[in-house]
Image 1 (cartoon, rainbow, N blue to C red):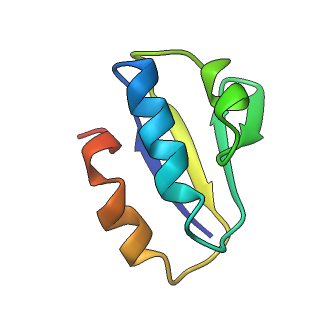
Image 2: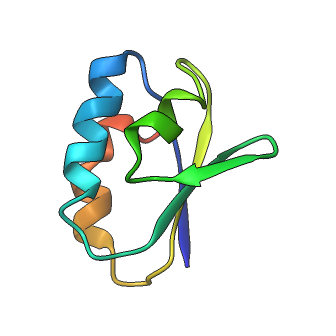
Length: 76
């Protein structure tokens, strides 16, 4: 399992993120506080909010291509 922290600035960022992660076969969850949602669910991610740090968990070790694809959303 690998993790990254992501931040979304707009709803269109969330939509773009979901379109990208849907192309990967990995199971992924996102968590903020005590809420955990499927990372491939736009409705789930919308509930986590904008401008907040959200933890992305990818249940695979070989996900470098995914992390490159979503680099614009990874928190510094």
